[in-house]
Structures are given as structure tokens and as C-alpha cells.
Length: 417
Ligand code: G6P
Ligand code: MN
Picture (cartoon, protein in one colour):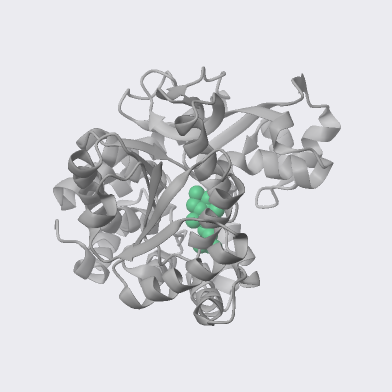
């Protein structure tokens, strides 16, 4: 029977994991769900809600909570990590500091994304190293952002079994469902690149290539990039490509809003948490659907099912490249289509990547590798080199201004520096 641990269980998304486990209870015999967090207040509220929610769903499972990481990881079969080091307060700084210089200020992209990686990688390496001892055959299912950099750090510096995920892996399925009413299992595609830097091509429905009309309907759901641009490219870029292909427009748009996304999320969180704390409430709060990570639990538990029941499942996963993308090094973690079963994760053949995105993918991977090394070593020089390599920063005088400011704003969370 399965011990399923959630690290960062105070996250608003936790009940979605529970719901998904409940839906698959026939095939996934979960004996224990262990909730772990460093914030006792949020953990207590979440544990209380999860118990009410599980009862409402008719689940027979032991829900436990702990502030002790060793206890949480010990003997775990699956460890789902969804932490936010420094909370949304630091997210808002990740957004606002680059924006001062008219640069993209975003949770995972650009200079802000690098600072998130700096805060997060040491904590995630600690979890992974503990798993080497306490749950050596267990799987770490990572949703902690920036998931590509976190997965690269864990695969390069530890022996833990990790699968790095992003909700974006099933976006094309979501788009096809919304625009054409087609269920997830009928839609396939090639997916290649990095986390939040990827391109979708060769979409098929029931194994036949989509018509041009279907392609445009699916692509039209991705409203963050211009549909004319998609037509020009011939492939669908991740919504995060908006920051690369529409940089000035997006920066101006963010600056024109009264609040950053992080500030909005702080308001949403309050609403969501008030609902969780209400002793009479046993339903998922409506405000949760306004968060961008919705649907992620379906992928996470789909992974558990593929491994535990040895069911061949095609999934988009962050894995070491090992030759899959010809122009990237073997250790580079890439986000690509993979086959998952009991033996683990096997990357599928990557179809030709459109030539026009080789440069962007390479440059961003170049940044990521330097950022990972800087985060592990506490190396300021490499942090500067990482931003010099980043296509959204690149300019030397900006790098010299940004680095001291970002390090100062995060100093409580950077023991390695
Ligand atoms: C998407 C991304 C996630 C990200 C989320 C942000 O789902 O793939 O990596 O965490 O959006 O959502 P939020 O509600 O926090 O802005
Ligand atoms: Mn993501």
C-alpha cells in the first residue's frame, strides 16, 4: 500500500491531489497521506480541511500531518513537492525588482525566476538527499518552480528519483477539449524544449493529423501569444513565450495593472484559506479555480498510476536530455514527451525542433545551467554570468545593478551565499 507525502502541504492545491487520489481509489491503494509543511498554522488548517474533504469524498485513508521532514519522507512511495520558499512576499519582489528596470518581472521567467531558483534549490536538494536515505526507492514528483531548474539541480547533484512536472504539459489537451470538445486521451502531440520554453507540433486526434481549422481552434485557446504569430511559426509556443515574442507589450501591460500577479495571488490565497479554515466547509473553494496551476494533480496522480500499476503512459516530463535534443548537453534537463511505467521515465524520440527556436532554447538553457551552478555553489560570479546569458536581461549594466539588489532582497533565504 502506498504512502503518499506532500511537502508544502500548506499550499492551496493540496485538496486537488486528494480529490484525484479519491477518483483513482480502485487502482491506487493509498494507506497514508502525510502532510508536511514548515508553517504550523497553515498545516493545521489544511489537515483539518483535508480530513473533512476526504470524509465528504468517502475516502478511507489515514491523513496525518507533521512538521518533521524526516518523518514525512520516511518510507514514502511518492513525495509530491509544491513549496514556495519565502512565500508570495518574495514572489512579489521577484516581479517588482526587474520591472523597475523595465524588464520582465515574473515568477519563473527572467531575473525573478533566477532568484526563485536561488531560494528553492538548496531546500529541494535537502529533500532529495534525505530521500536518498529515507525513501531510496520512492519517487519525488516535483511541482516546485522553477521546475526545470529544480529538476536539473536534483538530477545533477543527487541520486533521488525525480519527475519534474508543469501543468503546461497537458495544455494542448485542455485547449482541444475546450475548443473541440475532444477528450484528453484522443489527443497526442510532439512537445519539445524546456520548462516554460517549449513548442508543440504534430497534433493528432485519434492518430490522424489535425486539420488546419482544428489547429487554429486549438492554438486560439492560447491567448497569451498572437494567433498570427502561431501561424507564422507553424507550431504552438508555450504561453510563456509571450515574454520573449511580445516583451515590450507584456512589460507595459504588467506595469499598467494595479497589482502584480503575486499580489493578486496573495488576495486569492486569503479567500481560499478562509474557506479552508471554516469548520463547516467541506468543499473546494471556488477561488481556487482562479489559480494557474489547476489540473496539475491529474498529471501527478497519473504518474503515480503509471509507475505503481505499470501502465505505459505518455507524459510530458522534465528529464535529463541524454541526446534527445541534439543541440543541448546530456545533463541539461529538458521538458519533452516521455513514456512512463514501472521502470521509470523513458524519453520519446523528439521530432525535429523548428530551426527558429534553437537559439532561444539554447540561450535559456545556457542561463539555466549557470543559474543552477550558482544556486548550488553560492557563486555570485556565476549568477552574473547566468543573467548575461539570459536573452531577457543580457545587458552588463543591468546585470551589475540587478544582482546586488536581488541578493539583498533575498538574503534571509540564501544560506549558500
Ligand atoms: C502555470 C504554470 C505554473 C505556475 C502557474 C502560476 O500553471 O505552468 O508553473 O505556477 O501557472 O499560477 P498562479 O496562479 O500562481 O499565478
Ligand atoms: Mn509551470
